[in-house]
Amino acid sequence: MAVRITAGKARGRRLKPAAGRSSLRPTASKVREAVFDIIGPGLKGARFLDLYAGTGAVGLEALSRGAETAVFVEISQAMAERIRRAGREFGLSAQMKVYRRDALDYLKRAEGGSFDFVFADPPYRSGEVTKVLSLVPGVLKAEGMVIVEHPSKMVLPESVGPLRRKKRYTYGDTALTTFYIPEPSDDRGVDEDGGTVGSERG
Image (cartoon, rainbow, N blue to C red; front, side, top):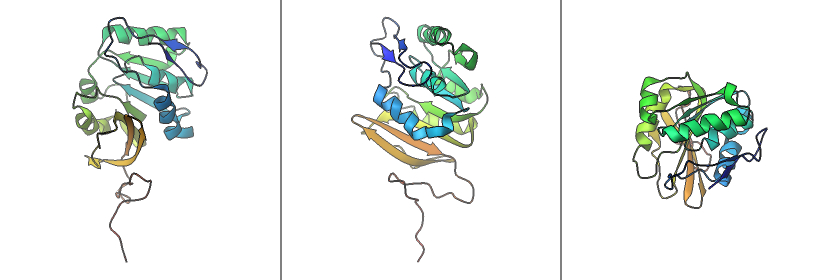
């Protein structure tokens, strides 16, 4: 199944998954657009990390839409090479780096510097979401954001280490949940409707 970049300087360019990867589940275009609606104008000039990159569509779209750099982490050699090839074809290779590595191993090594935005789309049955979230603070910049794609039936924890859940968005069977590290003076978190969560004072 071909995946199309939906906006920016690479708009309309298509990616094709490697043969034999019928189990690959690319992030749907409507969900990718939602990711960048959530991020908003802060993407311009940002550093973006695409974990479990697959086709690389999310990270490539981040570059297409104005991110300064993107790092892709993908364990499949075939998919990692396709991401590199797409970067060359789209004129984005100078702004990107691809690691052929397990996502958890990458996070433990904290390679590639720190990032403004981290997108993670672990295999739905892997059970790795909490493990990923526990390691992400090691690569996240102050005021950065983590966006996790997961099944809509799954509810992620309100906090994992220093990360606090900010908001959840649902698109059919898919959900996106955002996390951030609050300032020490504002460690209350944010509920799913965008309101602050904390003790009431009266």
